[in-house]
Image (tube, rainbow over all chains, first blue to last red; front, side, top):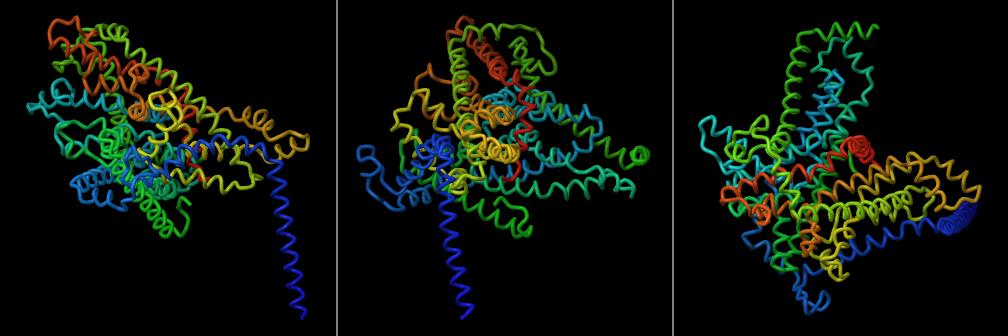
Length: 324
Length: 302
């Protein structure tokens, strides 16, 4: 009896609390009306340029014809996807995309970490500072210029690489004309352009390690290499995990610009990736529905990847290293 | 004192000396590897184009000439592109920074009802998007194709930058300050403009910098949305000249032979790479001061 009464009282209290909370929230909203005003333009921007296109994705399931408009075009279900999966471009673009991105991941993910670890061991301040400052200069070069630089550098007639090959008695190679060279050029030019930038965060994390750790290790007689192995690396692991999830989630989104600009008729079999294929079918051939289907396939795979990588990392690290 | 003694003692250990030796060599190679391509373009741009074509120019300029730079000065398309790029960069940066900083601030307010919902509303766009064609159709139906708006508006707010701004505001502006001004009857807008903004020049610089660099270097939106040559930003002209080898014949037309023309065109490429990157390198000291900061704020899990 008494218990029941208590429950009723509690119930009433929680009810009135809820009402109070609601009243408080309304009051807050009223008081902060100008904050909503401040964010309104951005919200509108996102609705128009992000959410409306998301809604427009449905043309992937329609047979879009300009005369009928989006709403008038007939539903055709998964026909566009079926067409993509059965076309020869499916395996070609998918393999090219995955090859380039996995190579990027395995080569260009660890390099900045190693670079940061090595740089962290430098005691001469000016040298450390100048190497770091110089290392991210290439990041600021535009993709067009980057590819222009590659064309000049790898030119079979005047490029310094081929000059070197000729000087050592070899025959010059037209690097951008050899399909199998494409992925290496793509990945290593990224190494050149992105290492310094990607290392910034690791270098900053390393500089946050308390000197006491090193002092204690030195008293115990640990060499530089051992200090790197047993202090620096364990310290970096959480940052590395977060960065790895982010990179792994981007596996399917190889940048359009660079691949597109590096394409030559000769290397197309190895350089056609999903994003360039989406651009060509969509805007060059005006096959809107098909192009959207291909791009939707890409987005969904990406989404699945980032969620699963995040889940796995979270499990492995007992909920510590994850994005959300 | 003690640690110094220990340090000097341990630094002399053989293993460390070997480690240092290799470490410095590796890093010196990195330094050379990063700088050499840039150095090569610079010396190629002021060397005799014949010697460059023959591969004779490798370490220092030979047969110094500024003919390429003179030619670029006469290149009308390039200068119109340059002007357009400056305009796009300034307009885009102003609009983007204003929207990003203001919405970042709003999202940083703990007393904002619906804060989580709003943040989620934006973050969805980091992981899912309509893709090329649906976005293109929206831009087209707004009548923006082939106008300056197409380059400035459709990409003007990045969620990532908004989150950086949010993290910055929520970690640097103390709650007590807002409460104190609220007691004095200060409205939110007034607080934002009179206190939040003046106290946060560095985050504004960081975000403006990210946007400016991206817009100056961007090429995709112009490729997709612009058709009129006089609206092209510099990067599109650069692509045509550097990669598609289509040099305006009036610029190299006075050269005698095909060979000569090709050499001049090649020289123009080196010069253009230098000219187009100059604004970035002029800004570099400023850029690098704020840049590292920005990357670091972005890395803080919000």
